[in-house]
Image (cartoon, rainbow, N blue to C red; front, side, top):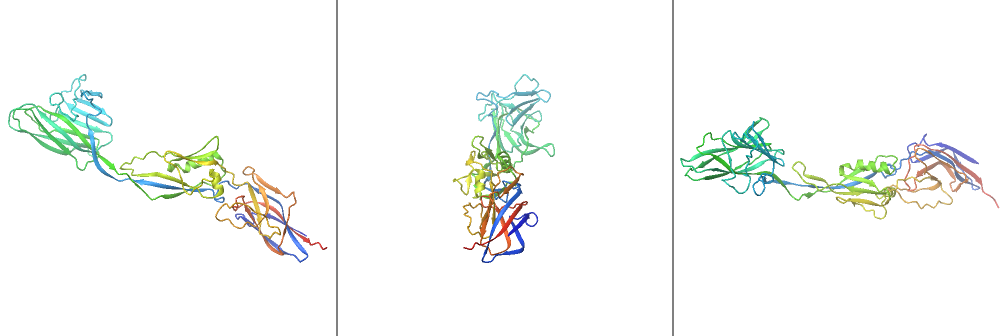
Length: 468
């Protein structure tokens, strides 16, 4: 007697990795009978992604170490003759004369120095002298300072914080009573569009008949970043010409420590479920690895996957004290098809470092075929158990049962996979009473498959035992 079962998986077990066939009437045998099971045919639409949560090959981790820096403020020489004048005190940069504004301007790097003097009326002349040098020359390198008509401005495009301004002022020989001269150091306030005084000082020239130099260093203890500074004399009338013969400044800079490596954090990267070939696999990885500055590529000759660490040497700034990608490690799950996807063989380790300014490369070619076979198993008790040497594909591996069919699935995605039992294979079973038959579906890595569509024809055949 033959019992036929025609099953559409979508009816009762659409989203399961099994089919339960509930027999309308249980099948029972006597001592003179036995049963065989036969899968006659099977068909399903090949819509099983080759990378998916079902196959457990769609997630990996990145262990990321960051490095955090701290700083304190220090200072360095900012306004000097470097770049402006050579060792012979000759001007290295162009001097821009504006006779309308009575100004002479020189620029080096991000710093522009402007000298205003109402005597600047000839754009063929040079008005700047090297008063920016460490050494002073009160004969050949001096520039006049007069209230409102002769003063200095220096402008920076980086809004530097000047912390100190060293000045040397000189007057030629003069005999008379001591003279007080007020010198002001100002900064430009963009909110008010006006100059604001940082500090003023009074220099007293004794006027004993000889040439005389007075020095003063202006300090700015809590500097505010600004684009422009000014140095000027605010004394209205002087009985002698006043010159500046040295002008240098320090700026505030952050001094960073060597940094502290922070505790690592593991980030889970999920590859969207889908059908992948080498090109879109690489593209997808690159999209997912952008935040880590890692790049995936596939060698055109050997199909090895390479992950390149593109992070460059990190330079901390006040606004960015954390090197997010100080050290990066890949964590690829120890799952056979995941390792095959990445071309990782015997070299697998828990943490795979991706060296700074270098790369990690797989041991062999990538393999994105994760479903070469569909294995249909049953919970029926075969008289001759199937011999299963199937690798374990994940931690939820369970007992296989007995294999009914081993079906090729090497066809293109979204084509029908068909099996027809042309060899008329059937298997004797030991069951004496059957009310439910469960069929399960696996790939060749023993990973359960949730087929959302399939049609199959199953037979239970009752035979009479031969008597001798």
